Image: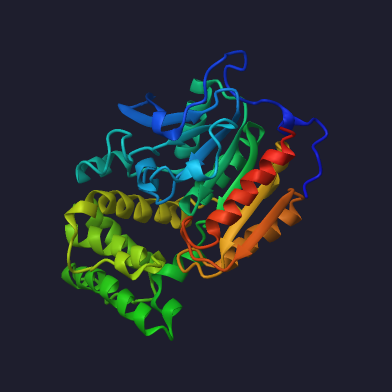
Length: 366
């Protein structure tokens, strides 16, 4: 259990408009709003729950997904009478404009996108809503961006609940985008080779040296350039490779050779933002999330980590590294390593996440 804070900040009602009397809204009655963030860009977000409840920021994954992709899953974790939930489509995704889902040419607006920009976007939303502090709740890429936000703005965070840990490191990059990572797994090797062949052909077409299947950086840089050019095959194969790594239901497997127009808009967004942000955060402008954990001390940010031991997209090893780093930095934390995959809907994952939310509520003194 976490020891109570001396200043009892978790026990404060850190919500907005604390003097207001307003009925709590369910997720189906959420208020949708748009916030201008400059340079002709807008953020779409929605709020639901109790305006005087404990505020929560949901950080969606991908990168490149959006709130709608999660089909109101947060209603399973947060009671609308207890919490005030804020869900934001990250810049360039979903209903935030200009959206890469709508037109691949909008990718040009986000070539320099960074964790710093995206965390600053959340600060803009927080300030707009008048929220003092909030709980950060996110998984996969949401764990990356959520952790970055908390390290940059620790005094604005009541705590973190993170799932499927991704730290944007060189080692993680290679774990997914190097062929040797799948040695001994015939199915994964076949999927990788289908993914790889397009980049290998592109290297040959450009008159470049033969592409090494273990040169993950060059491999994804080739994909990055193809995706930005609007190459539909590249967009689709990139998306399918990761999708098929994390699905647990065989009916959800996608064919890398057959584009689904129903899913292509999401594929276009995810493929672009993943390639761009992973390259940016790993090689071009690295952010040492583990090395900055001590910054959480400024806000005494209690942290819960939930990790599936069968997660192939975000391997368990890196969640273990995060937990060790939290301990070394003296950050109060609790970890749940469970027999599950990557998704929040994975067996056991939802139960563990709800347990973390309930513990946060209990520790808040509510």
